[in-house]
Image (cartoon, rainbow, N blue to C red; front, side):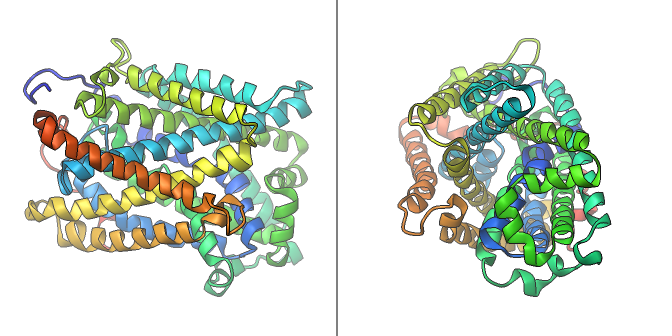
Length: 496
């Protein structure tokens, strides 16, 4: 393995600012997809009117994670993100284990979204364009386009995501305005923000569904090597993305409880699904607005596809650069500076998995999307818990580099809270899948995430004994952000 003083493959530096990272992270969360798909599904399954409050509680819990995550981002800039954090804080074996969990988690959510996109576009094309083709035709078409964009300049990707994200946010804002302007019963109810409404039947499933809506906000560190000022950019983007998504999701879910009425939520969500959003837009604004929102729903999914694709490509790049995986994965574009090999590798894997589901005759939403997104939720929350523990471990050896709140209190509390969330998701995994509680899938799919972590730990141990030169470099190649003076973290990283 090359020493740290020799030339190693690098991504193109100083391309991204705070706004770029916010677009990447919020686009991965896909606000319109969360409202039209996530919130309606949660209401249909649980009938719990406290969904809006759950988003605020989850945002506060994740903010504890973000405090330590942001503090450590001042000292670590690596496209492997969680991989590098775990390696620096807990040791290289933990880093490789985390890398394998990250790969299965971000790949599953990305590939699962092809099912949602393909099914949605097939319905749209049939009803609006008169073109009837199987869902997988549109799914593979999206895969080709995402693969093409993935090898281009990262700031071009951010520009594409920015346009798509702004348009879908406008659509959600229009829905919110119309919903609050037409409350059921003539008055705006606050039951959606009431603890008594949330902490009742189905609360576990509500949190299990809700955490999946935030997957992506934590991905800013993946782009840290390409930031203009990684010491502050990742921290600021993470806090902005978390605050925006938490408040926006809560507001929009509350708007749904207001316009539908708390007592009608489960029946309406079960009957209409995403149509609960588009029907309201047609009624409160116009059918044209609803049609445009339908298109934006698809572009919302596409934006998430592109964002997660970029994240996986950078993980593969980082692991290839440090020879934890084949070094060929570290190849970057001469002009674009993008992780070309990682991008192509992710596209190939996605194509193979899609083909398997197609040949098996699987349902694109109930199986491909639901199964894989459920796995991703478990994996990402588990990674965040491990990263919070790694923050404590890292600052134990660098106690003067952060305050006690940043290095111990917040990340320690986050580790406990996030591990509790993992257990909550697993306990309610049958609800996430929409399967019978006795279905073996509720244990098999989470087990695959755990198996990936175990495989990573075994591979890390192998590297320690058989390839010590590689082992010593795990998580360290791009360790220091840049030769810049340390600066204070945003004020949001202090106690609330």
